[in-house]
Image (cartoon, rainbow, N blue to C red; front, side, top):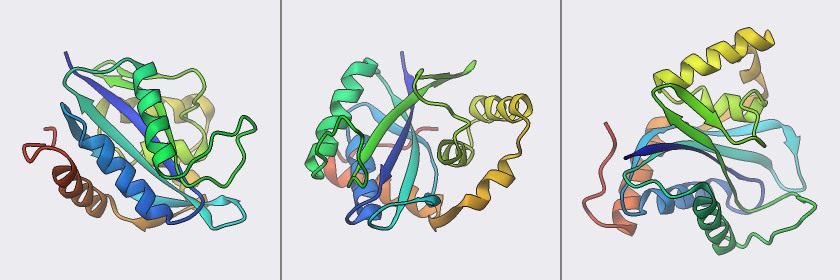
Length: 186
């Protein structure tokens, strides 16, 4: 049995792009993992912190033998700690790395984690870049239901690195980190 995890990575302090790319490669290097889809790196003009704007990256990773969500969350926290993230119950910003499991995707569409709203600007912007038919159908329905247009949402964000570059980097770096047999899904 396989499963696709929808994951958002964000960074607002330090070498933001490098942190996102390296963390994404670490996730992809996990045994039994392949890359289903990836957004570009994008910045958020809405929330400036003491450093620069927040950069984000959204991944769809396929797991041949999917871990439980709690196991993924623990994995995310270990990766975040490796980049110097210190957990703060007040969710203080800026942070060098934040990794969130947004939900899972199958042929019937996404199943969102309760605490994440895919209609939030920064999530919608990244998710809408993933060329996965069940996800796009769900995002189209969300736009109709809430009465907004995705292209209007895009004005608050800027492209930092394209999805093609991010895909190539993640695949090459994951191959270096993990076994040389790591393959792209599809």
